[in-house]
Image (cartoon, rainbow, N blue to C red):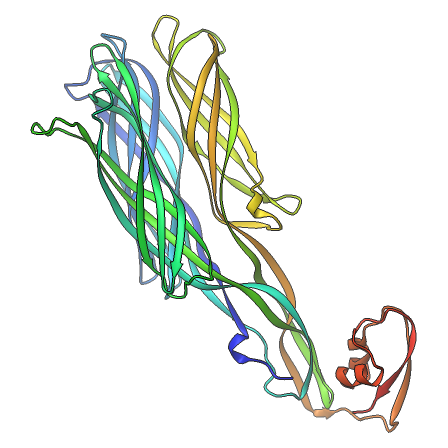
Length: 509
């Protein structure tokens, strides 16, 4: 039996590092002169941002900074203000060696932040966040192929998604966002940025990625009155990635992460159009798969010598499907004691994601941490924080059992006061990633042939064998040291599993 040696292998992603490190953030902050005194702390948050990630000589270094932001009620006019300070961090990880082709995936998760006011103008904060790091590379698996036709082999065709393209690229997006149609921005209270891919187009060796950045700003319009407003801006972006092995026929999975961003108010006295200067660093990771089949040898033996096949649990991907779905989660939040006169803003500072197989599909679940800034019935600022469970089964994840690059983002929030203490909230969640079907096949890794132990053939020219219903012709041929093709031909059979009991003629080799 001849095999095409060019198709006797496949490639798949493999994780060579998967770890987490805790980073501490200690801040001793004194308010600058232009900030009024603190009467009440509303919310203290810790936002990690990654500036660089590099791998060389088996050492992975991740550098960045975390921004500690404090929202508080100032003592004079009882309005919302904020102060913030940055703390740098650097973390090293050790790998056994540096892969030739790799991608570095990073994720941060704030764990806790404690804030204590030493005085109306001094704060001491102690917090920590987790830095999750993965290094992914490619691994080529070679399938067993006999050197000649001296072995009898049993083969099986399996669906196999072959990783043909794998790349990662960082790039920057810079934009001056006009706010001339919005209320004046005096100072920014907090901001959030997330990015998503909206369209992919592949040509040979290049991937054209289109996406959008969602920029949200909550700010003060007038310091004296404490009036606030929101800016929700969609910034489109496009990037062409050089990615060897990608083409029009590959199934492509792309992850887009915001590493760091910066927002500044532009004080241009010569312009009558106020603007916000926005800079962001994005990281795109792309995988391209070619769907097809592979012929796997599941058993083998020699008809001339004693032999012993050795098996391996061959792991491969049977299916790869990009996931990019949105759905609506309806929630309700209220005060346990007191009344709400006005909601100023609702946002999420954290959405967790967990993926589990469920009834031939994938279940994506986690928690949404909602933050609500409002005014009570006396127009005093209050802060409400609630955590909600969510669960969704993506339609594009049918028959899959795992997901690459799973991400859940809150892409939109709308709300209304249903009564004076309860808010009805409508959250739009976007689920992205790559749904895959992992499979394992028992396959032959090698065959030991003992040439010093020749098989003595029976002197009979023909052997009669009474087979039972359901018996396997491969096992019969193997036990009689004959060829499967000869057995099928001699008995005018096509299927190797018998559908009824019958007498078989066992030919001599």
